[in-house]
Amino acid sequence: MSSGFSKEATWDNYAKHMIHSKSAQLGSFGWIVGQDGTVYGTSPNAPVLTQEEGKSVGTAGPGMGLTIAGTKYQILRAMEETVLGKKGKANLVILKSKQINLVAIITEEDGDKFTPNNLLGPMENIHREFGKQGW
Image 1 (cartoon, rainbow, N blue to C red):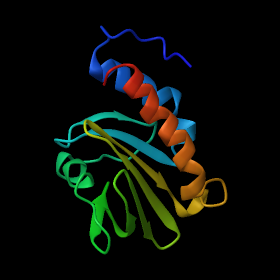
Image 2 (image 1 turned 180 degrees about the horizontal axis):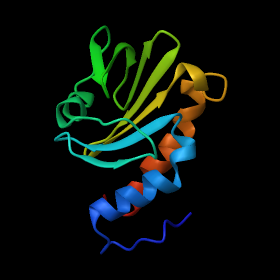
Image 3 (image 1 turned 180 degrees about the vertical axis):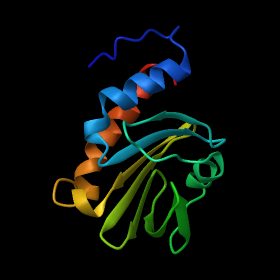
């Protein structure tokens, strides 16, 4: 699966392309966030993710609270690359790597369309696509 971007493509343009072309696979909202908290791409209509919130994504661990776009989620499970959180019926899914974090939110309204488990496969595909491009 080719993204249509060469290695010469800028990171920002590539991230924006990926998040917009794959946003239907990222739940209700999604972000591509650098380890320093820089937001490289957001899905359409996603709320604002502050740099501080973006930076905290990489440190999420079990039992802690994590605020994403102004909403605090309880982290239920954190593995090396995958973090799952919840607030009420809303879900948070994070896929971490050395350079970026993919963050997805499933709102209560979209809970019948998405589950955290059915987001992981598409998110892993997006993650692999970034790797193929050397990001």
